[in-house]
Length: 65
Ligand code: F3S
Image (cartoon, rainbow, N blue to C red; front, side):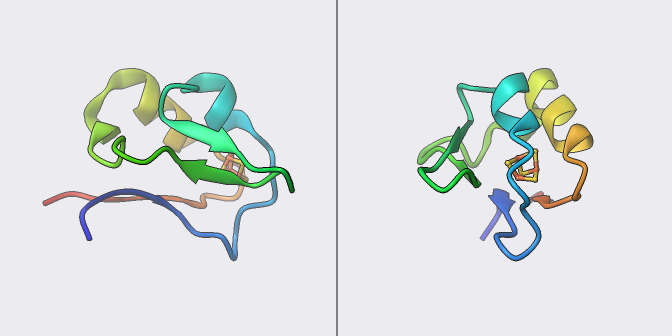
């Protein structure tokens, strides 16, 4: 599958993804990050790229087509 995804085995709930790109990431009730449905293709947007770079666990993956 192309686009953004979060590796749940690596996410530690730092929430920087949500703070930097709240239109693309959400935090679930247990504090872990997820890509908002329909926003998997937003990886080229600058604020989303910044969020990807700022995850301390490097848990946000981008698979370009
Ligand atoms: Fe998880 Fe990284 Fe976001 S640890 S909550 S994907 S900043």
